[in-house]
Image 1: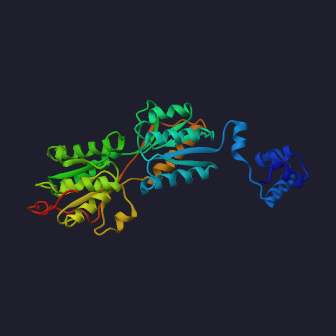
Image 2 (image 1 turned 60 degrees about the vertical axis):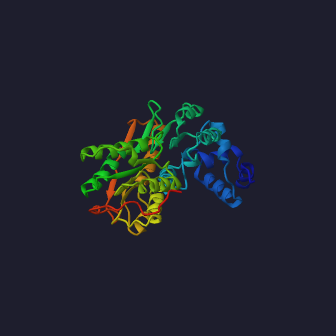
Image 3 (image 1 turned 180 degrees about the vertical axis):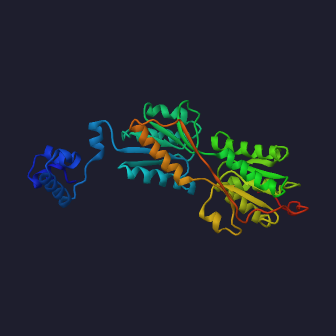
Amino acid sequence: MIGLEEVAKLARVSPATASRALHRPELVALQTRERVEEAAQQLGYRPNVLARSLRTRGSRTIGLIVTDILNPFHATLAKGVQDAAEGQGYTVLMFNSDEQPDKERRALETLQGHLPQGLIVVPTAQTGDNLQIVSGLPVVELDRTSGLEGAHSVLADNVSGAREAVSHLTALGHRRIGMIVGRQDVSTARERLQGYREALAAAGLPYQEALVLPGNHREADGRLAAMQLLSQRERPTALFVGNNEMTVGAVLAARELGLELPRELSVVGFDDSRWAQTLSPALTVVAQPTYELGQIACQWLLSVIGGQPWPDSVRLPTTLIHRSSTSPPLAQPSRHPAGASVP
């Protein structure tokens, strides 16, 4: 690797002057700075950012931990964070926890060695405990909350979004509405279930536990939950699904059972994506401002690092997008398909 000494020798200055020219250019005469920069470019010199951070006890680096980078929602969150960070000259070190607290802990231990200035995390069930590893580091919780007292968080209005989705179905005339929920140790899943219950109550409909099954945020579990709901003797005429991965599973289950959307089954998902728009029929969804969530979380973190005051939490509104997967129910909804079984 090309070192600073080689750059200094070619530029005919001392290593200390070369370092100042590259890292504190305002302290060096213009002609000297240009000579050093030209030498660095000619030699292909790249500064050792980590070594410099060890000397200064800090870096222009922030950490980001998401729970499922394969989920388009989390990928878009990460894009928002990265774009905002790069705009302020920061580098993002990203990790994927796969919803596993142990994996999240290992990510925090690795991140700690890079001396980040702050952290953005989509929490797991044990984030409150795991954050002790980076005690004192500015942290913003994104999309979910860990329950940690005094934590900063940037969230979507999940209760309102879910309530609007289910109210849309009740307004169409649906009275037997199933829900596929996420894990109840995740704040977003609890809030979306709360919105579902509030919408049923507003429509004068009872909450029925048999119509609410877990999908655990995964496509396969969402499919299994939908198969069970749609194979009931008196099946739901509509489904509200708590995230985009589970919605994929629910649509696949409906197809396997030969149910036509929306004539025989209406579906509303939570989260928008390209496939939701191009599916036939296109899905009615609750859209989150996903990119903006990541962007604001990063801007907020950098402001906290800079000592600027921010509120403890921010909630961004969701939007119900009406497409083609919802319609009034049939006058006499069909029973579950003959011979259908749940794998």
